[in-house]
Image 1 (tube, rainbow, N blue to C red):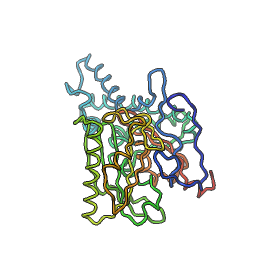
Image 2 (cartoon, rainbow, N blue to C red):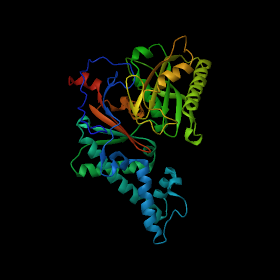
Image 3 (cartoon, one colour):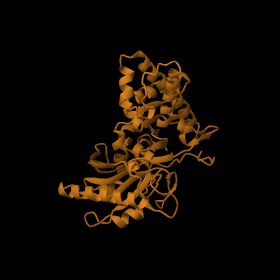
Image 4 (spheres, helix red, strand yellow):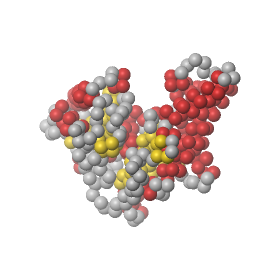
Length: 367
């Protein structure tokens, strides 16, 4: 089901379906993208928001308020939004039983919410028979995030739902760059060492050089060679200023790669929020980006093409996809034991995508 209530059947493609090279493509070399950016709603709003980073903070603040009424808030006057995940991890393992109990109680309640969200997604036709969900986003890198995920698995198993929940293998800050390699067929990458990639979020922008070694189509050794980070939310740039800065970051990395004799493919893979159509237009979900990025009046690939020079004499080819999809694609090498799997990225909201492994079909004969 998509945001307007329409039912979308799972996209089942034969294993020999050719991969497509284009924005928002559903059939890639390694996987078919069955669904992404699902916006389930109930009477309280978006279902995914119940398992977001903001939701965890709201739960923690609610329990702090209950303790304050008894004069026992162990975190003192520090606003909940200013307590880092690492600090919460320290409280959880610390000697203060009230502080540890407070964090544990918030984690337990959040785990119940995560389990509910998982159940709602599994009811969707496009998420049917999902065997594993990878949890990405900033919360996944913390102990409290892993504890919530483990508790959610126990809750689900108690309800007869057998499903693996795993934390993302790559660091969340790098996964959104590493996955961009999977957007390109191997013939685009052949003879090269690396690609340009960008991960655009509502608060941060990362542009990087992603290195790889292809052996019989295997991209399991992909890693970030170098990346640049800009927290654009602090600067409040216009849309044009943000695109200019992104192009400057990319150009700096192209120059660095050349200085180190790294052969870049003329390819730029980009992950950003929202629904991406075949023309590279963000048709929905780009409202948190600087300026107005949605609709036919703006095309990110075209804007970048005007700003970036050739790479080794070739005009760079741009492919744009949803950021949760790209982060999920970083897990392709680790998901080969499964047929159907998905990703939740826990951030300000809940990014999501569901995949079917094409290599699984080829090995098993299933379609």
